[in-house]
Every structure is written in C-alpha cells, then in structure tokens.
Length: 246
Image (cartoon, rainbow, N blue to C red; front, side, top):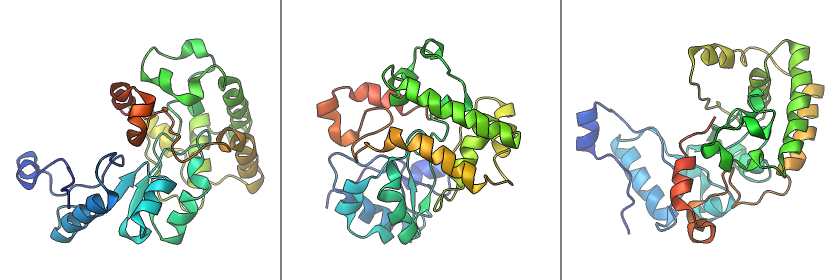
C-alpha cells in the first residue's frame, strides 16, 4: 500500500498544540482512495483524528471507494448557484448518515448581493468562479433578484435567506461560512431560528436549478479538479482558487 500524505505528524501536532486533526481535503490524482481511507481509519483508531471527512467527492470517488459508510462527513461546494451534489451525492449521504457541511454557501459573495455587475468583481481568484462569467452572469442575476424578493418578505438579508435555504435542505448538517468582518458573523447568525415557507423554498429551488442541471461529476465551481489537472492546464491557478470560498 502507498502511504497517503496526510500532512502533520504526531510530533508536529504536539509542537503546535493540536490534539486532533478534524478533516481531510481534495481527492488525490495519484493515490488510490482505498489507501487514503485505510490510512485515515488507522489514524482514527489511534485517536489522531476524530472522524474521516472528505471534501469535493462526487460520484467517481464514492464509486471507487465502494463502501460509503467508511466516511463520516463530506464538505462539498453547495449553494443555490451550485447544486451538483443533489442528483446522487446528497441522497447517498442521507442514506448512509454521512454529515454534509457545504462550503461556499454564498458563492463567493454572489448570494449576498455583493456583485451586481461584472465590473464590480475584484481582479483576483474570484474571476475564475464559473458563476461570475459573462455568459452565465445574467442567469445568476435572475436568481439573485428572486432571492431579494423572498428575503424582503421575511425581513432578512440576501445572505441570511440563501443560508436558510441551504439549511432547510434535507441532509445538511451545518454550513461553513467565511467572514472578514465581525458584522458578518452577526448577519450569518440571522439565518438561524426561522424557516422558509414551503412555497418560498420551492420558488428559490425552481429558479436556481437550471443553472446546475447540466453539471457533471468533474465540474467544479472554479473549473479545476486535481484528477483533471493535465487537461485543464492551470494547477497553480487552481491552488490559488482554493484559498477563497465565500
């Protein structure tokens, strides 16, 4: 078996004062998943990690693994604007009681109403976001405009309403949100302790689904996947894109 590179050793963890590692990362293009999961199971048994959590697994990874019960949690990109896990992956996670913790729930600020024109987008990694491309952006704005109407009905912000829609999806355990200001913490907390009426939940689902209907298992929000590096041809850009999720 090829030993999977899992980052920190026990000595390094002790030096940093870390008692346990919480999760894992992207699927490797070179190491079989069985080897990676086998190593994680060993670390879990010895107490170095508390659970086995994977990120960005789609149908090919689950099929390769074979036994989904070996994984405790999944961190996928998931929002009103990126719903590729709904077809097969989210139902599988519900079936095997795998915790689902979406990241990029606001699609890098789009669902907070931060960018209403392409000219407003900073010249940084967000330029690679597939929902911020000229050919798709008008359809994104249609979703945002309906989101505005629903948010106004409840007296909530766009971000709170987008997060509430996500939390109301069956099988979602929690949502990973990013923030750069303390005020955003308070705003994000405003997504809790209320529910969308079924008619509004369905309205948001209906307006947003066409954007995700054609997505396949190799599609990612940033157009990059480690198993497709050679085809895509911008590995370093892909690494940079992983640094900004919300």
